[in-house]
Length: 77
Image (tube, rainbow, N blue to C red; front, top):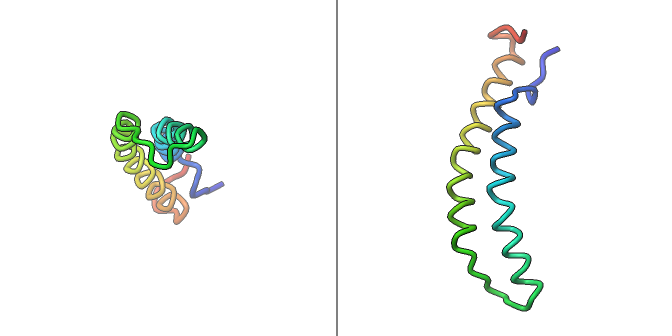
């Protein structure tokens, strides 16, 4: 069966983006919950930025591979 979202590369990219942005979201939520309207999680932001680029590229590659397999241009094993 052909599926667009069946590529492991896509899900690895989603996992990398989720793991990379989790510390930034946690630090921001912690700051807001303790009354800081402008938290400044610099290290968490740099980590999220560093993880977003490879994760986003893997998502794009996985989607392209899924679309190519869905259209039947290559075998889907």
